[in-house]
Image (cartoon, rainbow, N blue to C red; front, top):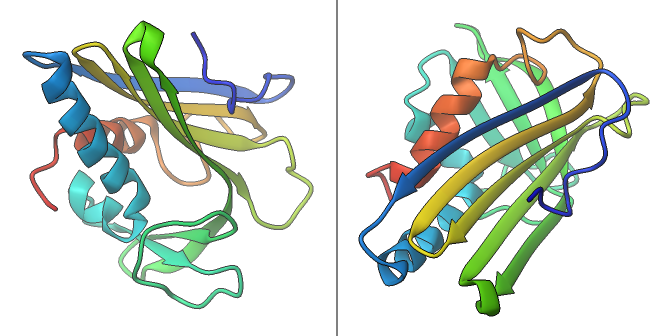
Length: 174
């Protein structure tokens, strides 16, 4: 079942990358869900979690001041790539949503982004952390992206997004 924050795909590239792990119990998965959600919100450490060497990810407020805190709606994410760490892309966080479905022993936390500037209003990426009973998933959904399929979302290839999704679930860094 697709998360409600993931928009309908109408044009351009559509991509889904998911990673999942099983745990010994729903209780253990619940603890790991909280840790994964915290890692998702700690955007300034994404590059460290994923082990990126040529990529830095910086969180700024809506006025582009660098902040060292967890993400909030209207914050911007800057992806810096290459040896010179040039600011290649910026995205605004337009939604952060937690949902609990106790009848299904399921909970989700989602963060939705879209590029700043330009006319790419429908170009989105949604990252969902989901717990279903004793299983935990991190899923990257890209919708309506005008770029090519090799560089999935403005400079990060599929392997980088996959690595980040896995690290959100299993990273030892806190």
